[in-house]
Length: 488
Ligand SMILES: CC(=O)N[C@H]1[C@@H](OP(=O)(O)OP(=O)(O)OC[C@H]2O[C@@H](n3ccc(=O)[nH]c3=O)[C@H](O)[C@@H]2O)O[C@H](CO)[C@@H](O)[C@@H]1O[C@H](C)C(=O)N[C@@H](C)C(=O)N[C@H](CCC(=O)O)C(=O)O
Ligand SMILES: Nc1ncnc2c1ncn2[C@@H]1O[C@H](COP(=O)(O)OP(=O)(O)OP(=O)(O)O)[C@@H](O)[C@H]1O
Ligand SMILES: N[C@H](CCC[C@H](N)C(=O)O)C(=O)O
Ligand SMILES: [Mg+2]
Image (cartoon, rainbow, N blue to C red; front, top):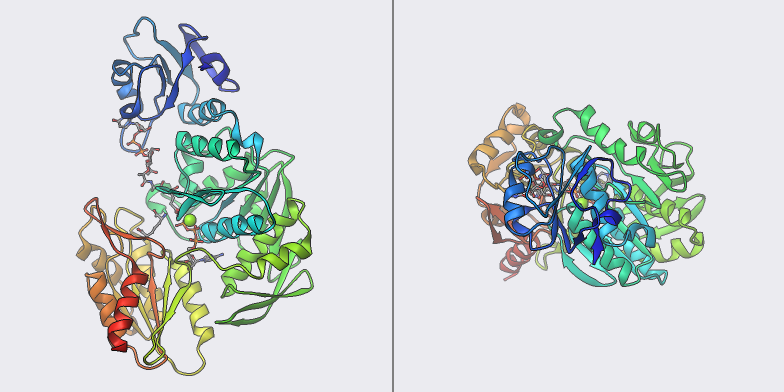
């Protein structure tokens, strides 16, 4: 059993009221999960304030409370710890409680608007291929040495994250690769973790509903690098406008990758086709199975991290050249009849949509039509909707706007937001079909021989969230079904 004083190690304390040697059986940030002997950390959230649930936590048997402001009534036998910052304390406490897992492994974090899952997954597969026992924390899935643990967030909350990292360390994972979302940095979910290295992919429009301004979004991502220690490495994308700013104040060893300028990890694309990428990586020519310029960036980031972790350059390139990407990222099927190419991709930001559509355009051999099916998520940044609508129309021949995950919103309103402000050229190309299955069916029926379909936004997701109910939905499965109908 852990003792309170031990798990408060390095927490910025203001006062301790009660027994600092009280035993602690579990750590919780959600009062609904509190059991006898638990320590409950009251965190101020976006919807409610955890301080309001202190009495409930005490009622359920919590013996220690960590908070910023003390409740008016203190219960006998409960230790109240007043801290400067509860969210930060939750991270540090959880890290201490689970035996400081990040100190027992090489933990590498990946941040950026697009590419996190791809980079983290490639690193996981690469290090597996190099013979290490590894862990992965990602949007698609969390993995402990091959065992899949379902994922609910891109970066789990501080308690779930440290519990997961603790399991990984206990099971002998020497390398763990994790996505670090801007929400996670801002909410201090990663407080207390020691990173061996950090990677930046890019920053473009997303999540402005949460961060409010682009500057605040940049600040959130930059804070991840500001918090690194001097023994870590920090690798940035020199071709991103904000690449240098990210590393401006970091104590870590600064490195960069690029396709366009001088960098530590320099790439040049020689060929970009459906069969893969041929590129030079620091002068060495390599064939990769991944497609598109954006993946050339992801591969350089992965290469840079592996070399910074001390791996042999030749061996890294050899394993990397055989790897495929993450599920639902440029995943494709070809219909038997007409050889229609259907691509399922997780592009859910304007930049990702431009990238994936530009890649598709480059893959065209002649005048094949590009037909795009796309929607925007509900309860997420509304300002990206008209931009994604315009981008889809600009870069496609025909477009079907449909539902993504409407969540609590009216699907028709989301479609109206996507249609708002479309140029007259764009207006001539689109039709809105709210039912996603119907939309995919229509797109397939519109396709002529060798045309290219892009089903964007949901990638690996196996559900559609409508009014809080997650109904089974899988873009790739639906596409397959429609191709089979076409082939009959
Ligand atoms: C906007 C956001 O990030 N919200 C997250 C946040 O919720 P919140 O701040 O609204 O929490 P709250 O409901 O106000 O509650 C405040 C505190 O009181 C506690 N509480 C609440 C109710 C109660 O009865 N008892 C109790 O103790 C809560 O556990 C919390 O500690 O803290 C919760 C607990 O950690 C998260 O589950 C929740 O994620 C929600 C579900 C979410 O959808 N988050 C998305 C936007 C997200 O985080 N996405 C990122 C990035 C995606 C990407 O681009 O890849 C991700 O990392 O997944
Ligand atoms: N380096 C990149 N630059 C720009 N776009 C990219 C890059 N890598 C992937 N993409 C595009 O973005 C989509 C999402 O990629 P990925 O899942 O790797 O990003 P992510 O950062 O993990 O996203 P999320 O924030 O949802 O977790 C891909 O399906 C692809 O269209
Ligand atoms: N991690 C991202 C995923 C968006 C995926 C898209 N399908 C949507 O539902 O908006 C988010 O939570 O904003
Ligand atoms: Mg991700």
